Length: 224
Image (cartoon, rainbow, N blue to C red; front, top):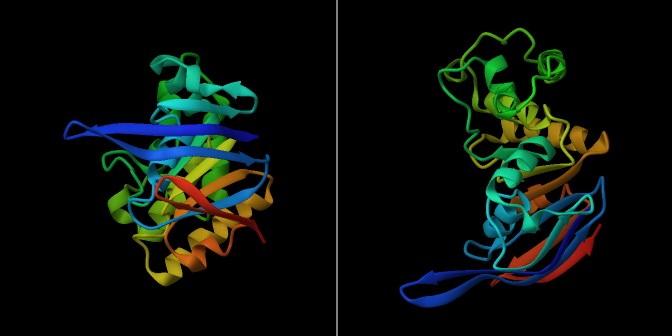
């Protein structure tokens, strides 16, 4: 369960205070697929950063699975993020010198205690997404759609409570985009909570629920 209560995020720009978020209250039940939609500068990326524990609210409360993560210090937030939140970005964020398997296993590097079962899980995830024969390939040897599939497998490695996707089809052709969105649909169908940020109405229409953000506020929130 994701719960945001009166979340604000204020920046100082040229000596002036600017509210990127101005009192966001939102509850997302476990297992729901939500699209956050809004124009450039609406605050949707700031909202995603707070949901992903990459940024902290200026005020308000953020709870994930009944834990108030808005109170965590940097070290605890980093550990929680690695274990409980999976990220899929528009630009893939794969490390070029690592193989496909090594990229999927990247979250393992930040664990304080070894978890040998993660390698078996990584192999299973790559088989599931059709890249079981590409374990030793590097990102440059993959198509854009394949790289995004690797990023999704990496996001799922730690079996997170929440998967966040930031414009996951923004750098893909229409066929690859459809393939990646199909994967996200499968992830959600498996019971995963998914929050996706997009400016594309067709992508947003795949979600169960659309939350429209403008000027740092929720303008519309509808379930389909």
